[in-house]
Amino acid sequence: MQIVVVGSGIAGLSAALSAAQAGARVTLVERAVEGEHGGNTRYTEAYLRMKSMDEVADDFVDHFMANAGGYTDPSIVQEMVRSYDDWSPLARSQSTVDPDLLTAFVEHAGPTLRWLEASGLRFDFLPTAFITTTTTRLLPVGGGWAMVETLTSAARDAGVEFRFATTARGLAMDCGKVVGLETSRGTIDCNAVILACGGFEGNPEMLAHYVGPGAVNLRPVARGGHYNKGEGIRMALAIGAAPNGDFGSYHAEPIDPRSGIAEPAIFTFPYGILVNKAGQRFTDEAPGTVDAHYESVTRRIYEQRDGIAWMITDAGLDDVPNWQKGSRTDQPPVTAATIAELADQIGVPATALAATINQFNAACTQGAFDPLRADGLATTGLTPPKSNWARPIARGPFRAWPVISANVFTFGGLKADRHARVIDQDGQPIPGLYAAGETMGIYYRTYTGSTSVLRGAVFGRQAALHACGAVA
Image (cartoon, rainbow, N blue to C red):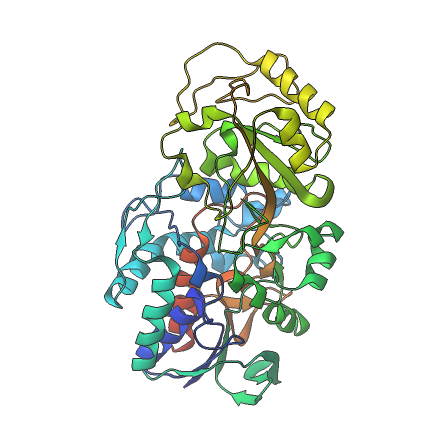
């Protein structure tokens, strides 16, 4: 049994190691050079939406189903309540989060983490960058870097052949079955290909095509995302794979565009205001806890002229305990003694900014400020409102950070079943083809936070086990 895995993030490494442990000969193809491999996984802290090593968080399924797709035909939804074997081809190829795959995700999350633990990783409930939270998150000790390095070593020990600086170009077919992978260094014959080569956040042409012309203002959240150019998705669609996930969207994270470090996130904006280049507020900065709402706020930033906003605070930010953990940039804020000076430094019309802040201050009400929970301290009579942590911006020094939307990963990908088999437009598995990680489309509307790394690990492993005949 020869398995080819494309990509060396958590999905690819989980697939490669699992396949090797199941007795297959495994070749892993990776565009990056060794030491820079691992895709987005290498650079993430790898939050996992779990309440223990063995159980997903209480809101896991509910959040996925609340963001399961567009307005699906009710007759198709009714089919999906039945056993998967009774679904029509139309239902099986439907672009949505299908409940059978979600059930498999939940069932295999805990066992997959236990397998990763046995492979040398450790997990704990470590501090996160979120000052306020609504769900539970487990983390691998050492983050995504530890995942990549530990699993790379384990895969090598298990006999996996790594081919770095090698790009996947296409799928070799014979009588409707995938029998090989065409690469920049020749074709590799195999029994199955597992596509785990990311989304298309590193491909400006695909971003413009699917997300829109404003995508020129996006950038990958970390260096690993630049390697994700969408070939895996394209080559599968070219042989009839069904698409899944929201191709016009992506996971948004607010970052400081001045910084070149991985994930220079600005999660402190709920304690100030956000203004666009015209000096105007445009969104409720604090509808609730930052972990639950940062993505929706970041999307509003993306909609502004040039896709940028400024977070503005005063000395009151220092009333937030350890606020620095939510400001992960390595660049200092712009500071000034007056609003007029601040406006001049950040290139925002001074008169407009002063009017915005005066209106905001007048709308703030008296009440107890509690920075560690949604305190209900809201503005009155202001559009847009601020629902929590609304206090006047009046005490110098005044500080400002630029904020743009980073593209953590794209949502559009391939339709797959609970075994990570790629499904074609007729609702049938494509023999010999699997997809995991970002290449598998599963997200719509709002990202179910802290599930992407887990998705990669779970379905990378399931793909390998099925390809090797280790599961029914």
